[in-house]
Image 1 (cartoon, rainbow, N blue to C red):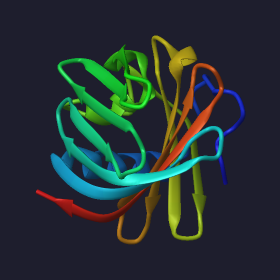
Image 2: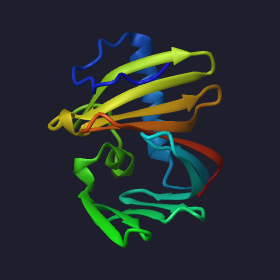
Image 3: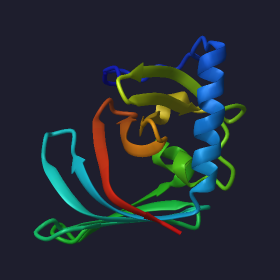
Image 4: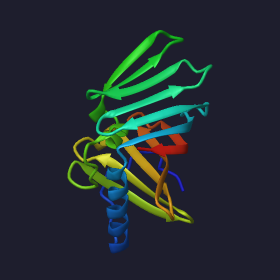
Length: 175
């Protein structure tokens, strides 16, 4: 299972089972206030990097890439800041202009400002694809959960340019 080449912007037709799974996932996500994990990231060009990620909800995230990667991603105060030390270049993106910002909301809800565009089940996993209702063209966030027990395993970001970045989490620590 994988996300489509172009962002799906229409709401998914959800069954009663889908709604129950979404409620369970929403409760799980809202229970995660802090997390530290190792990550493996696959960039749109196929390059693979790894590092350590920290999440503190609401609103804060840090991706510290292992050497030799020159990258650092920090989210806070409504911005996602991406720094490339090799190029000595920093980009600032408003949190609400990136699908990744959906992970940082104080109260994660899959209604209203967020639209569920897809829900798929596979052996031992559930994938939920989300867009911001007001700006679906900004990209899609697909969360991948292992089950049972329910746990966030990875996510894919399909950005506004149609490029997909995949992040897989390992050794998660909560609290």
